[in-house]
Every structure is written in C-alpha cells, then in structure tokens.
Amino acid sequence: MSTEGSAVPPHLLAMAERTGAPQLTPAAMDQRWGPRSTWTPARGQLWRVVRNNVTALVILVDVQADSVTAVPTTVDPAPTGEDIVVVADTALGVPVFAWIGLLRSLPAAVLDRPVDAVSADVVSQVLDLATIRPAYKDVILDERAAELLDD
Image 1 (cartoon, one colour):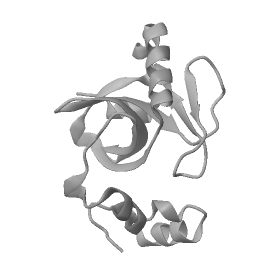
Image 2 (cartoon, one colour):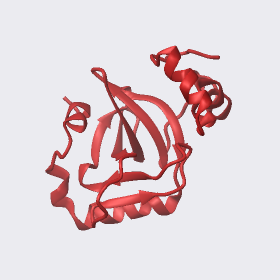
Image 3 (spheres, one colour):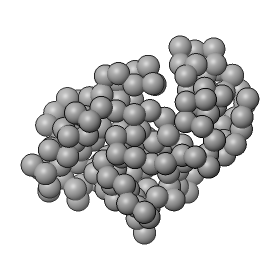
Image 4 (tube, helix red, strand yellow):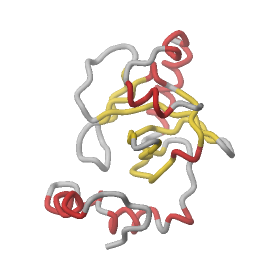
C-alpha cells in the first residue's frame, strides 16, 4: 500500500478498506490518479485540500498556475437551499454538498490529493449560482473554510 504524501493513520486506512469505500484507499487512488508527480488539477475535480492541519474537500471550478477557484463541500447532510448543490454520485459513496456561498480562490499549494471528478453540469450549476448570488462570497460559514483562504 502506497503511503506517498499520506498522513492518514494506518488504523484508519484499514478501516477504509473494510468499509464500502475501497475506492478511497491509497492503492485504489494511486491506481486511478497515478503517482503524485502526474496529478494535474482540472476543472470539475473533487480534491482534498490541507492547510495548517485543516483538511477539507473542494470542487475545482477554475484552475490557474498558482491558484484555484474552489467551492468547499461536506458529506454531512446540509439543508437544501439556494446556495447548496448536491452531488449525489461520488467516489465517497455518499452525496456531497457544495456550499456555493463559500466559493473562494485558494493557493494551489493547498491541493493535497484528487478524490473524484464531478460532471460539467455540476460545475455549471456552481458557477451559475455563484454569479446570481455574489454577495455570498464574503460569508464565512465554517471555521475550517476560513483557515483555507489565501493569506
């Protein structure tokens, strides 16, 4: 089992292998995405981001050389509303809730590992809602998201 760049404790990796998400083990992720040196961030990918021991999942909606524009997601059931996009089919085996109001530019250095890819329709929904509700961009609903923002 590959541990390249992995800070996941072995007992959690073993638990992941025993659960219904074997596609999320490091070996399965390496098989899908290849070695770290070949990872290329792209629009529509779901990435794990890490900064100052804070970890989150984000959907990339735009990729530049040194930064990405991303919307944070959660697997916790979110109240459905005008600023939430639900992604029902993911490699996580559970729906992912994209928080449109937290769309942000992040430094590319926080990208830790690709997890999945979402459809172009999901990315379009995110961008359409972000355009309609630009005032949400300044709202910080979650302390973890605040720590991932650019300095």
